[in-house]
Image 1 (cartoon, rainbow, N blue to C red):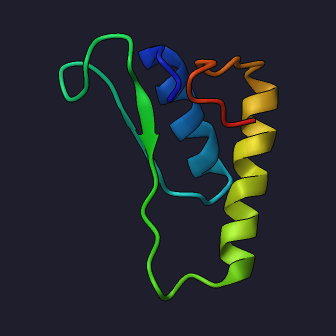
Image 2: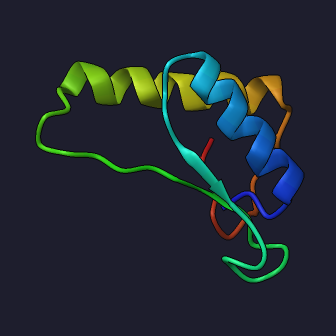
Length: 75
């Protein structure tokens, strides 16, 4: 949960530049100030794929200097 729609959009764009396809959702799809990133996994994803995605989330989160909603921390 990121909260800020702008941050969710920036994060999704930055992850895509790293080859990680995710979708940022914000109002009206989710409640206002509850923007988030949607990730979908399948059985075809390997452990290496998942680890690469997690590493990219950490890297992008740090680059954006994002402080996640304390009720839903991701870093």
